[in-house]
Length: 319
Image (cartoon, rainbow, N blue to C red; front, side):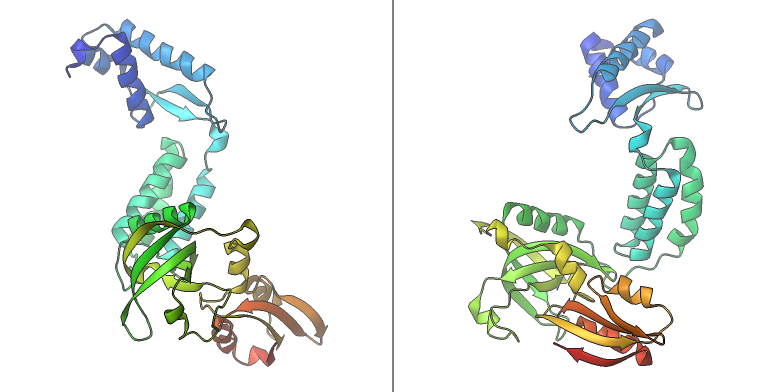
């Protein structure tokens, strides 16, 4: 539609949509596009400004129309205290880079959009300059797979309590298997996203170390080859709901298995690092720089961590 055919309502809606998209609105260019004088565009902008001043979204976010003297145009801003600071934005981007969770193209795109949407435009370049070297040398994980859309499908199934059918390539033998699952949560650990889910198949469960184990099985999402969300729903009583936060405290390296308690003696230089690594850990005794520590954990991942600590850990006992 030609801008010259717009009436006042059309113009205001056009301008408002452009502002929501983050565009800079320049009065002279718009006047030419609409075939009106600059005062008409200015009045349209003032109407939008008045609307924004009177309006507030349900979550309390207030937007305002501001004039950008550097760009010589109007743009929309939301309350500054709801934005991340430059330091917070840099910290989030650094954590994402360290995660190596996405392909290089995905990672660069995500970082650019975080910076563009979280901080004022004048602060973007310093942040992007600080990130550019790491982006250039960024190394993708070996699988080089894109799975964000697949992960979102799984997330929606979790929210709606729907069964999912997946084909999954196992890491231990490379075999592709089919699973019918009750999805419970999506988690991230050690470079990978994982699905925790309960298998709804008694025949499959026969091969487990613990039959009818109350803990979920764990699947690396990049190894899920296909996902089909079922129309069938499952019901979990509120008292029996899966709490990923509590599970996350007790699982190491995303290795599933039964819940157990481990006790060991730590004689390294930083007991704080042990307490940070094992959120359920407690010091039950200390003498001469040796700490007796107990922790509640799921599965066999704890054994990998203990072996990685060498002679700093001794007298390991499982209960």
